[in-house]
Image (cartoon, rainbow over all chains, first blue to last red; front, top):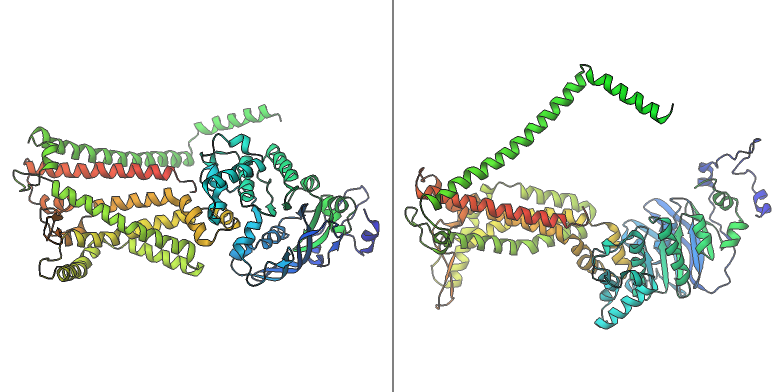
Length: 295
Length: 325
């Protein structure tokens, strides 16, 4: 832990009383003290996405404050922070899923392969196919397993039936679900367990051959065993895809990610390699969060 | 105190309380009795309706020796000796199917507009308007039918035929009227069921690169389909049972809704026909007890009861298939 940084701050956020008990951080103070200057340890890997001075407003609510964040290619980047800190909003801004929420205003830029996705003339349909998304709660369509995975391909059009069948199989294999469902592809996806449904949703995203997978707390609704399977899968997928994962679970961040960004009240407080962020926090608030003093 | 001790104390307290005279207990017991009586009344009424109408209908076959075959294959109705229901039955089938066939696509389209496309501020008033529509008494529809639809049908058909052949009464006017009556039934249920599709389903589809229309067509509507079918079946039930509004415009003649022959335009709509419900309405006040007509009218009632029971069963089936409540 970097003692220097901690001592720089005039008033500590936590106090240790004589008997050693740590008082809770005053969250009010945290809310007002969220700076918009990020303590950044720049990644060495080439970047897939870079946001520059991204600001997002829901009506009058300033949800994302001046976030500039690099996202390295074929790495897992975890976004962590307490509830309501804007990490899901940030994730949804990357593939323009915020477009469907009325009264949302966005400034700044999101560079995806060095092209601003908010520039005029961006093909949102193509963008969303290149940046696949997995949601917090498994959300399979009330259709068969096969139809769920084939959905994106049928939307795109121009695939023959055998091509679709091939892609469905590869995607299900890619999501480590093929062995469990290969004999019941025509059964309803809603009959699967929660963990299987979530892997189906990953397969569904993989089917349209994305470059990036955006995962919004993909394991938060799952039991520990299903969670482990998803995490193993994330390790596998990193070989081919750039992954951004929002997580509530600090251990999960250390298990699956190579880079971590810490959000607080809409600002990116700290970003760097996961091990560094966890073991040598540059910001006191990151340290407090990791130590479980708030959030 | 251990858990066992607490339980013991609990049950002791309960025993002590149960023996005592308490106002709370009296309210509790009398409420239970009241609700039981309510439930029994409903069930008893239903049973009485079925038994009463069923037993009267049964006399058609035992006392008057009219067979089901007679009723359905004969076209001859004189309300005294001949009770052929073929024309009325065809009228009912035609009315129900065409009505629902025309109104279902409109209703679902309207529901999609209200639930998916219209801006938020417009949704509540639109829905309110549909519900207002649903609440219009059928006699109003009948009057409008008589004043607006019958002349309209008359003018259009006569100008198409190039001669004054039609008086405007009959199955076409009835279909137009009942279509408007069924529309809000299917629409309100479709709105509810489309709204019940979770946002995650729409997001999942949009995140795969689907456009809004693709999302509605491929994700929202399939998820909402069982609910929409429930609405359609309820629409069928409404069209089947509608009497007053139809009576205004149907013409009340015991003949087929249309005839087909080799003379152009090949299909000739009848000036006035009848459906099962209006046949009941027009004949019951003249039917006296212990006549074949009386029993036959009960048979028609019983058929309507059975068909609507089947429809309710089908709608229950679709309701049970709903994924999102």
